[in-house]
Image (cartoon, rainbow, N blue to C red):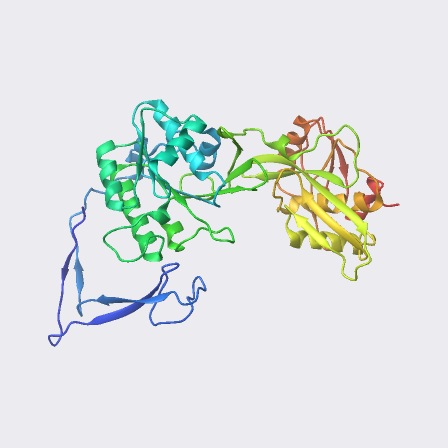
Length: 466
């Protein structure tokens, strides 16, 4: 422990007192009170934080806890990641859980966070070396036991406790000495050392700080379950995301069994990886090859559909865009979007009407994806435009064709990154033709490439426009 001694010099027998103000949402400090935080733009979150210091205070060097060493001599074996036994989660974590790491898993209610972490606790216990400890603050121990029976996640090395007091959690850790600690959820925990209700800004910050200190002191990986707000962001103060080492977002459509775990922050690996899971009645299972979940495989051509390839992290996945164009008598035609970026869809429709010379001002346009997949990257622009053009002209695209490219406002087609990797995944699933922008780079030998410089040329190649 580092000991720092202070030597105060008091001028005129008085002690200087300085006052600062801190935002309860993001932790940003300002010299004077303001109604709106200049960092996170939140209203009414700046609070007074008094700091008393002696005038002329000077720090005196203390004894370090350990000597500094050349970085090449630092032992890294103690920081190696341990696999959880859930392959798709290990992919997002960068290989597994690092000792002393604190992971925050956030998601909407009912998306499957507790089910996934029960699987993690079970797989860790199956290894047999050290037990796993699951702390639940939202449900009783009996309710968690019923879920574990339904999903088949019961093992003698799994320990379960229903607690909402941080001091009691410390006691359980001391008694069980687990290899991994799961806290469900951080918003239900409270620390007796600070005031405030559970879930409040003060309590969440204190509980998280205490658990982070526990993880670093014992080298214990801790997984925290977090709530989200109505817009999908992590609930609680923004400083919560800064305190932890890894932030994961658990996503999924309530009407679909597909679930995605997306990395938002990761100090030990790539922060853009994605893991795919399927939620079933008997638990949750990883989906190492999810491309087939987002396609309607057909042997015949169908109007209004276009297949594209997106890259989630390092993983290429095929997705299908569907469009429906119908005449309307309404003064303002409808534009409905599901699973796509509405702003990019509106831009694609405008370019299609202006540069592609297709009349859409008197037609309703509906666009959607298949399987609950969300396609938001620019590489999907060409698929959206061609699906709408196919529906408007009643001319289908070839069923073995994939389209990849970004559409500019002047109608030009721009290349995207990793075209070769995307088309290799498409060829593996039987798609032998690809419509791509010029200079797309090396392509798989089994893929027949159709090159178009602009949107009009692409429409003519596919006979969607004479």
